[in-house]
View 1 (cartoon, rainbow, N blue to C red):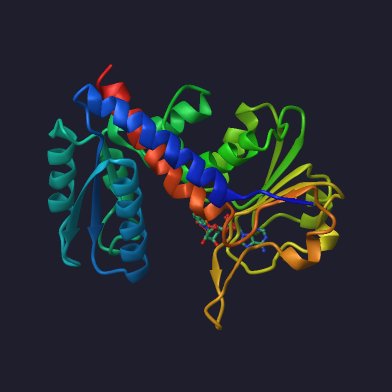
View 2 (tube, rainbow, N blue to C red; view 1 turned 135 degrees about the vertical axis):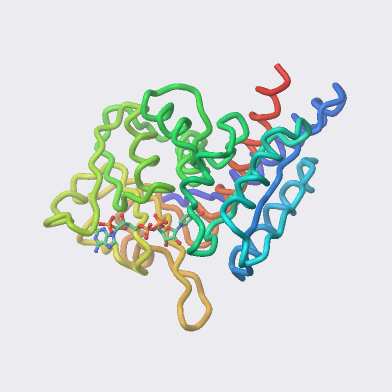
Length: 281
Ligand code: NDP
């Protein structure tokens, strides 16, 4: 078994971006990310702080808009419009969750597709489905980067994705399909899940249930990608895969923490640099 070290790939990716950004700066171009946060979600505050840190490391300018809990939809949309029109801003990110009285889908639609570094605008989602160049949702994009970095073959392989969320499961399946895997998507209504997962050469678990995937669900030699981040009562983070139980049966596996997690921010940074280059072509 070999560990897929997301921390390492993330560091490498960020170092490459840092070098790229310093070349852009020599040409007078500085990438800039604008982050909008509505309300006081404590986990979001940590995520935004980490995004800020990654920007600082790479040399990306960062601007933060903290809107109060009672923000109205039209106020949120008009901030997005303002950032869409602000030339110095290359990427816009709306941190989720946002308060329930707001319509997040309308907000995602409002972010200009050229600045949609999270890849949530339906135009960018559509481009992914059509196999066109686009901004890919950062977590699946990061998983593809790990697979590429470790030279893991995808073409012709049976790939099974457990989970069909808009931010992980669906774009993940599409990315694997675009690389010519034969893809099966499973979800809470799937019958006899393990009979499907047992045929997976590549298994991606994005469920949100600790240690859900057990040894008897795995094909010997499979590549296992664990997206889950489950905080346990003792404060420890556990993945969706029962790591200790499956590790001797697989060829590759991502640890939690230190696997998929660190890649998500690195790919956000990749998307910001890409947006900047596209806008300055
Ligand atoms: P969602 O809750 O949006 O989706 C979970 C999916 O799992 C759903 O499609 C659901 O099916 C499916 N599911 C639930 N129970 C079962 C079951 N018993 N059998 C089969 N499928 C099941 O979660 P996300 O996709 O947003 O996130 C998944 C996990 O990944 C979470 O732990 C989250 O914290 C983590 N995550 C990690 C990131 C990272 O950077 N590493 C980024 C984003 C998420 P159905 O659609 O039928 O309800």
